[in-house]
Image (cartoon, rainbow, N blue to C red; front, side):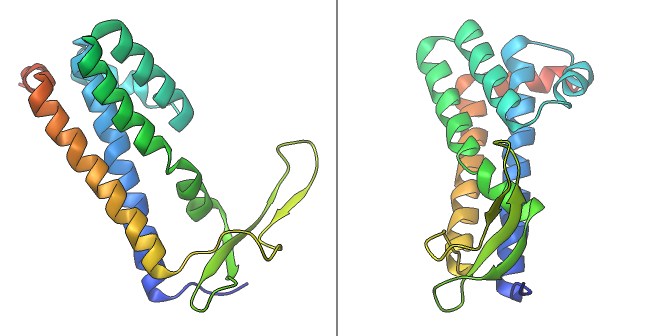
Length: 165
């Protein structure tokens, strides 16, 4: 095992922060989609893991929003969910040196398929430089900015704002 560099750790923090910001934004957006009480909706959405939140968000959007608005929201949700695996690696892995200079890769054990699978022991597995991770953190930040813009252009921000008064 290796200790990630300060730059890697900073990028980890940015990824986790930006991921959580979009996740919270999706839950808040759903308040407007279903026109629900703010506190009650957040309580109801709290137990959802990322996959469940993605499925609920897309289903509600397709049921309650006009098709172009639903499609825009579903694209944001899908783009956010793309980073779920990386978020989980950061949250649940130890790290070891990667194949490239200055890179690291996750090292952990998976037993999901009914057998032990050691991740991080094969040369061909993905590794990450601090710059690679920062690039992903920036992409998550841009997804959050798209979600904020979507709230304004869709009119959902006005519905949500009325729920917080």
